[in-house]
Length: 370
Image 1: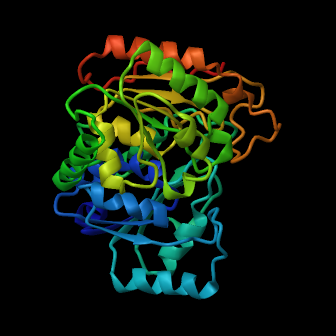
Image 2: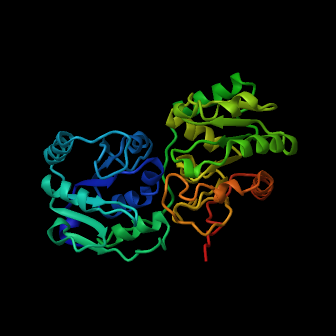
Image 3: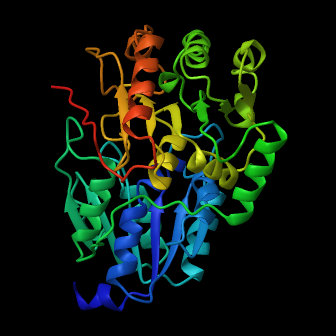
């Protein structure tokens, strides 16, 4: 490691995507912590990314910012950009690490750091950044991702000599959140210590949502085959979308849609026997807390599979895989629509049988697209 990076104390970590993307950076945060003793890590991220920061012990602070070069529902103002640069400059960071996916350009964030007077600036980049980056990792993944997102970020910080012995995802469940969830379950007549399933049917992108009609069939099958209590989770914004599920389900089902904060969701998932969800933030929470999961994996991005946790990865292969789209560009949604609920049921039964107690973390299923 260079003397400049070894001497860095105030480090800005930039990941402007959502909750799951931030969680997949946590092993790299750990590597920075382990390799630069005494460093102070601040995360610059989206508002949804900032929401998970309190549960990441490697971070000391977080700044939420809607960057104009990222996808948002709201327009970003020039004034907000100047205010963000001024806020960063006032904190006198020694270094910045810009975490991005292979399909994103880090140069807008690099320019922001340059304006903020941050002397050390590290990122992967296709174009020659010249003076925008002090430490440039040439981007090699052009047509498709070849590394898991977690490995990509670990490789980035390794460029400046940072590594960690433990590369597990990080999510710390507060004791108060765990106690609150236990109370919620008991009030619903569910024993918190007994087996239960968590079903998270929502997703921020339509392309990553398993069809509601399939969820309805699946829950009926799960109730008949397993008889475990099933708990439905989701954001407040999912209430209308998931209303057919919460109103139609019968049997041992309890809806907590919109009723849990992020720490409580983590506590619920940590104590569950199994999570069934799509490639969303809760899938990465499950990986961080060691809960087995069945991942209904939309083929939008190949590099976001569950990291180091027992799982089953389910999808129907399609020629339009790796589309990177928030809605299906072919309008058929076959990568998930053609995934039969019975296939999901059998994967859940198999995973529960193979992991009756909390398993050691293992990346037991690989995603191969050929």
